[in-house]
Image 1 (cartoon, rainbow, N blue to C red):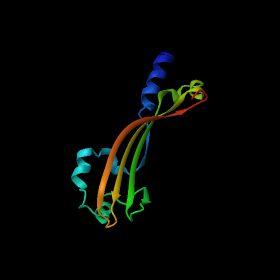
Image 2 (cartoon, rainbow, N blue to C red):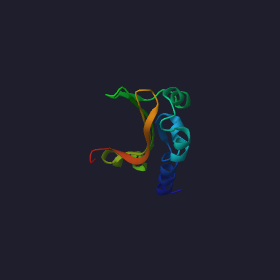
Image 3 (cartoon, helix red, strand yellow):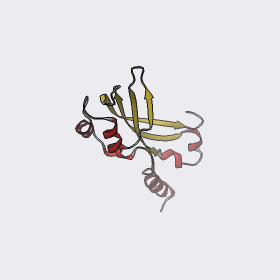
Image 4 (cartoon, one colour):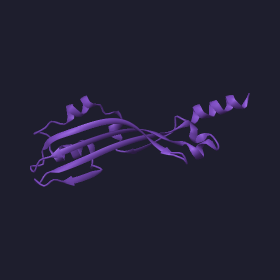
Length: 128
């Protein structure tokens, strides 16, 4: 087998590797599923904590309420990371990010929430 074919096979095998961080329940969550679980002016902090666990971050709001953040990130290595020498100049990861931000009023009930799903990248190497 030629060196090019071996290199191609190696790239295909390793590009599927990825790291997952944050709240794993968000990995398969859709906008509709969030809307079915969270109801403004009805769902309480205790119910959210029971469904999703503790948030990653809690911010206090001046009116006595809170904002909770749940986040999930999946990072997959770029194929060039496994190419000798080239990886020193270019590299990084392709990232999928999901965030659920919930704003509670001073009574501890959901005022509103946002759910986002975005793509990004992390660049590494001398020319990034």
